[in-house]
Length: 139
Length: 139
Length: 139
Length: 139
Image 1 (cartoon, one colour):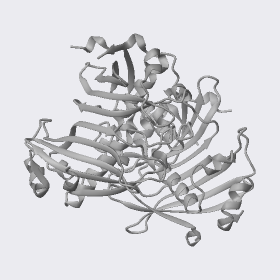
Image 2: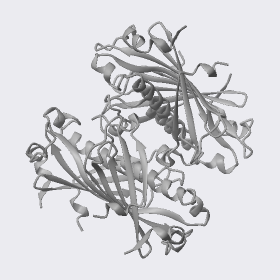
Image 3: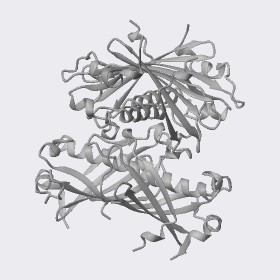
């Protein structure tokens, strides 16, 4: 159980316009929640969204896996949690979303991020790694 | 100045995925904010979203006017406020959005809502009016 | 009847993820359709999206009014039409959306656009006016 | 190479409001494209969206993996292709998106879908399998 290893939790409330015609949160919206959580995390670390970009480095999602466990409905509040591992140039974000009311697991995602430099090539990612060093588990 | 007449205020934080390619909140997203605010208001009044529907009545937006005053950026938090007037079968929501940091006006909207019955005709709206009677200014 | 004055028509198909929990296209999505139509129009005129920006001018929506007449459903195709008037620095886009199957009016919108210069002030709009001169009705 | 095994291709044009603040299509939007493609496919097969629902069966995404290869920009048109395998109650949609202009691969996804019955349990999926039998590769 690695649940206790989360390094960041963000509370997010479902907004009704995120529901689809079946009355549950649309699958694509979860990727918004995941991105929003990563941005909130780097912001907390004093890395404003876009600052890596101004260094000429852009973090991009290379790969994403998500398992949908329990659908969210109107009025639900979620706890969106993450932990990070580094594998060479890749930053692996393990992101789990729980329903706040009962801590039931809603979705489990693994998001692989790399840093691209100005020429579009994958960077070693050392600048990003330095800024979030204390949270990284080398894998 | 009718600013002091607001009957409801909701705090909403900009999420980065709501920004468009110019780095500001996309115009369409404001309609989401306005809808989210109306739903939060009726929820506070004990009218869960969809309960009017189960009576066979569906509130629908008939008309909307919005003036964009100041764009919202990444990291901004807004105060989304509303007051309501009734004009016959129409419920007029006056909805203003302010940037929380400095109370600068962001957008001003007027949203006209009517209740449709099962046959698709406009209802007099008395059921809705009853439930929010204390907030209504007859116009 | 000014329907015959339209200068541009774009066919757009509803995508199922644009439906809300009531099974109809969400109100905010219509603003996306309207924006998409304006962009397709300026592209047709050889003004790629962003080229005005590179001149230091950015067209921004200042005001928008929309009347919702008939909701769109899954599978619907629409015809999104526009004509333009200029009033001083303001470009007024009259945009009407019809259901393709029966030409029933779906929504009627009036969108006011101004050009901002680099300092955030409203520009006279002459550069934009020149490029679309043949379509402009001075009002 | 299983590229020749695609059973369905849908052409989709990028809409400018799908771009994020970096000027490329936002990651979450690809899930919309994938869903839109699946819906277009079942519609072509005479299964209108929602008809399975009326049987009391609802197809839900259980799991999704996506690899982002090349970002899409304003003006791009994509070819969204799919093939299907069945593994017991699971329908595996292999969905690949190509940039139309040069057939460069944009994204590769594997989407696992199951049918839920009225009680929220996973159904064997035989009703869906029957309707799309000719396209199914048993795995």
